[in-house]
Amino acid sequence: TVNLKINGKNYVVESGQTILDVCNKLGIYIPTLCFMKGISEGGHCGLCVVEVKGARTLLRACITEVFEGMEVITDSPFVRDVRKTVFEMILADHKVECPVCKRDETCEIKKVAKYMGLPEFDFPELCEIEFKDNSIISREPAKCIKCKRCISTCQLIPGIGIYGFVGKGHEATVEPPESVSMDETPCIVCGQCVVRCPVGALTERDDIDKVLEVLADEKKTVFVSFAPSVRVAIGEAFGMEPGTVVVGKLVSALRKLGFDRVYDVNFGADLTIVEEANELIERIKGDKPLPMATSCCPGWVNFVERFYPEFIPYLSTCKSPQAMLGALVKAYMVEKEGISKENIVHVTVMPCTAKKYEAARDELAGDTDIVLTTRELGRLLKMFNIDIRDLPEDEADKPFGEYTGAGTIFGVTGGVMEAALRTAADWLSGGSFDKIEFESVRGFEDLKFADVEVGDKKIKVAVAHTLSAAVRLLEMIKNKEVDIHFFEVMACPGGCIGGGGQPIPTTKDILRKRAEGLYSDDEKRILRKSHENPYIKAAYEMFLGEIGGEKAHKLLHTTYSR
Ligand code: HC1
Ligand code: SF4
Image (cartoon, rainbow, N blue to C red; front, side):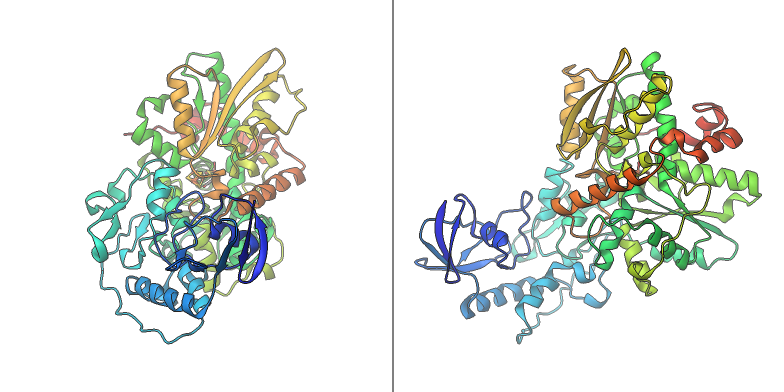
């Protein structure tokens, strides 16, 4: 430990930490626009300067380690003055359009501006860059403050490295190579850069207008469905505690917006499990390639198609829950209700930017028409002054709004695996498998292995989240260092609870709370195994025929490309 003084008070703290680390833990605010623990710790923005007794200049708190006897002043007229100049320079590079900026109150520049109070600012000339890239991951270079967070995020989380600096000095911008649009890069659209951007320079393509258009069109029957992890995150957009399960209020909110039917992607997740567990058992018994990989995360599917195409045969052919639900509901409405297909619209609310990409895939054409992220739904509700906190609990429409606990845990890493094991183990043991919770696939370790004994059989599985962990697993499989039947990959840290479309910020603590929310939703359900969902059973009996049969295959399975 070291003894030091901060703002005149004595503290004893662990050695080896920076001043910023120590102050963050003590709750002493030091502004910064580039620092992000584990991602960007390099001292780029210059806002975190502090006075250290004996030093000839101000020092950056993010890169200066504490030492015995150190005396630090984090805020003084001099420190403020320097920070003000630094902030003016940052603003000079930033297109200020706060009233219409998507980042709204989550913008980190606004937080710093609040700290600055309302001093006389030399308001800089507005940045003149006009270019805007309207890809699914939209870039607005005029707002970029060159903090480098996106550069390191893309290197560390998906492990790709799309972004770099183009140009020099004041003229430099952060771009994909040769300044192509994001759609032309091998970006897998996970959106992790978006949730780490401190400002509105990286956002998701905004599809709110498309939703308003179909809701206003009387010819259209518009059904909406929302993903597992949206129910534990959307509350945050309204100041609720992360992880609060707001499924009933969310249903009310969507009805208020005017959707004709409100369904639940969790039903789609239950359906996916029934098909996927069946596919796994067929693969174990038959001669199709093993291990089988989950295929519900489009960030992961994009990654396999772009970087590991030799693994395409291992991907489950099951469509994702989003696509399965869309395909089933549309076919059902056409066949049973006589509505013509072109007048049915499926809108989804997803924690995920890559789901926008998935919806546009040729192989899944028509299953999903418009995808909104959790954040976009938050903005849409605010446009109509709908505050989720004030709404009563309501129930989703039957039959496609009913779900089991297995469906809901899809939203957290290990959840798809656990849901699949609940069903596969039951089937392999002839319906006598009592265990519901599979602790061995839970938790935030980025790569986990587990063996599940079912009678005299053993199912060997692995779970990875973040693609850098997935790459380690793929290399082990290639080198025959592991022997497994089935593995789950989710591109985002923590799975979809940490998706690129979720409310900002997403910290480790927030991830933990969202995960707890999903597990508590699971625990409260009477039915916790997908194949026990009575409406899933009815869907097969009345409409789909056999699990894994011809009609199920036509509607619920897909192929991959590239
Ligand atoms: Fe996910 Fe899924 S869990 S992929 O993370 O399989 O997006 O929440 O909706 O489709 O169910 C996302 C979440 C989501 C699908 C399901
Ligand atoms: Fe999307 Fe979830 Fe995959 Fe992230 S983990 S890319 S949020 S599906």
